[in-house]
Length: 110
Image (cartoon, rainbow, N blue to C red; front, side, top):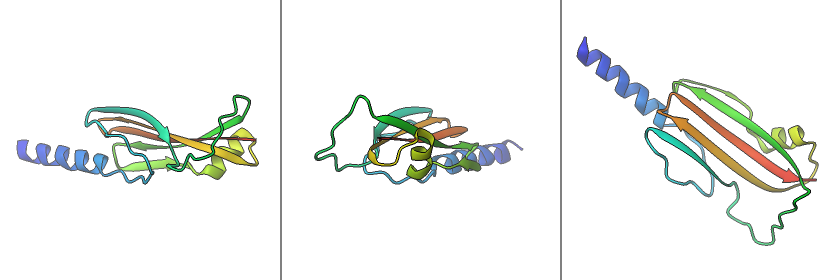
């Protein structure tokens, strides 16, 4: 019984840590807790930050490393902010023990 419980826990941890997201900038993740923001694009040459730019976001949430739901596409984020022309995009990642994870894309533009 004890070995079965440890095996189940190990599988859940591995599944939770196996989340797959590809971004140009990926800060290190903690095993217990992670929360960070970074640019979604590594090519920031010529990007000007407009303090009056519109902002929209979209997210995906995962539970127990088993079920994930949502739409974190740039199109969904642009629709959320009423943006027709995206000038810059960031992402945020949040994780607690692989039990709850959230990946958010935020776009800026006009």
